[in-house]
Image 1 (cartoon, rainbow, N blue to C red):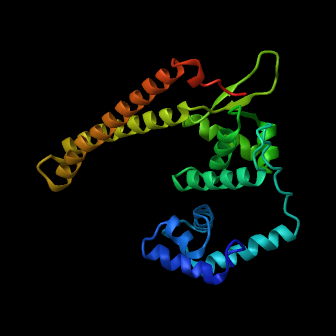
Image 2: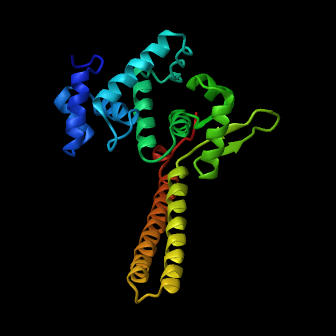
Amino acid sequence: MPGGRLTGEDRRHIAAALAEGLGYTEIGRQLGRPASTIMREVTRNGGPGAYGADRAQEATRHRALRRKQGAQPPAPPVPDSGHGRDPREVEDFTESFTALLAESGLPRMEARVLARLYIADSGALTAAELVQRLGVSPASVSHAVAFLERHGLLRRERTPGERRERYVTDDDIWIRSLLAAARMNETLAATARRGAEVLGAATPSGARFESSVELFLLISESLRQLTEQCRQRLAARAAGPPEHRSTGPQ
């Protein structure tokens, strides 16, 4: 029934709808479910290109069995910091955001860590806090943090006089991510240009490399222009009237 657990029939409907190219919102509408529910279901069971109804049903049965056999207790709800939020709604949104990050290419654990950091009002958590909120081992958090730091999605911060590090994220993570993508496209352009030289621009394979150079450079230029526009808008907002300025983490 709508709102309850997905049934085998629901999963067959999802598989058929994905094969037709329908999006999560439309599938959710047909089943009377939130799009976030459909996204989580598909993401945790292979993604849009590999989702199978029978395999998803069996995987769900195994997950339920593991929980009954003594899995770790669920992570505590996200504190509402006195803002009067509904913890269940916050948790549901956190799961949806995590699923979206994972679908965009982040490994699952890294997506979970980044989502928890990003929804925290302070934008910062310690390793111990991440372990508690995610219900995972310190090693899992450490590996995820190292990955996110390499990709510019968080930074380490230590308050003077304190021994524990905090992992921090902010509005600039998306700008840094776009800049990283711009640099990658510039690297691809240079490599494609070299490929055309080695293979010969007049040959089919060399021409293929040659034609991609302009595309990579155009993408890179567009990303850099976009990040500069974002920086200018953020700076203008910060310098605006006091009532429109960001007060920063509480």
